[in-house]
Length: 511
Image (cartoon, rainbow, N blue to C red):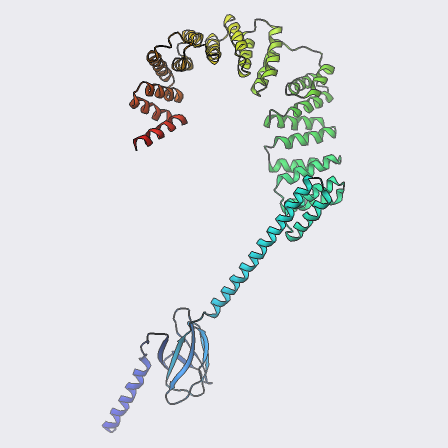
């Protein structure tokens, strides 16, 4: 073959090879120009169809022909970079130059997402407006209900429910109004709707249970109270209500069990004692009934006193009266506790513990003179003398009689030298004694005595936070701030909040 021809063929092949591997450089700016060759970037099938691919970031583009060597190409269309784009080819060319137009606008997907977001925001806004309107109807209905305008209120509750079909509270309130209007069918329909919406809301079962009870449908009431107890097992009122329902069905054993559980959860439930007494009486257990009526009476149930007079003809022992007094004392009913201690003392005039406990009841009733008298009697009867002296001292201090108070604390300590609280209390008395105390003029001497007593209390009870705290105040009064701060730090570490406040004040003063 002619050498020149060979050179021409080789040059031609070189150009072809080069054309398969060459790509134009990107032009900076709005437009990026690329030269694509038929090396897989522009793929053409045998029928005249093809597609253009470019793995770039997800941005809008369009394609148009700039030049076409050896032919003519229609390839105008829109798409997303990274997606395949089918182009119609009129005539193939081995070398076609395209221009990719970067659109200034948003892609189709972006527009669709924004549209979805706008629709969602619009929908949420409409929902919020509906909720506000429903709440407005509900609030107006509640005010109507307060004035017992049940029919007008229910019109508003109905509008609220139409806007918000799952408005549990609106159903419940509308049901209550229907019940008051004696429209029981609609009342229970609304109660049922409220429970369907919120099956775990124990209040709904309580309300429906009470409605059943009013209609004397006690079996249905028991079912609701049982469900209430499942949801709220520590509800003393739920057990009490179910006990009432059992009593009205003459199931007294089950009623007593529920009343007992109610009392366990709420010892101040005077009605539970009263009705449990009736249940015991129905079962022939009169002693138990009288005990319950006695407690109910002490808690203020007038009917219980009548039943006591009619059914309880026996007398309690001094110890039994004292125990009843102790139980009532723990409930904070100090006047009734005094009455029961009186009966104990009437039965046994030398009952030291009854005097001691009655003194405590008088103290909480702020009748300090009677408290002192009973503590004195307790001391005479040798009942817990150390404690009796200590308690009598506290009563004296309440009357600002520091001389007798400090004297009694000293006697308490003499009875029990390890009585930490007596040392602490005497320290307080020394610290707080005023003009009524014989040694009032020598305040420094009193404060030093207080420190000795606080220190002894701490020695006997190293975790006595109040002793550290009060000793800190006493050191402060004596001008020893270093020891005061040390005591307050210790008291604070033991949980005393006053000492923490003092440390905070001192910290601010230093700044």
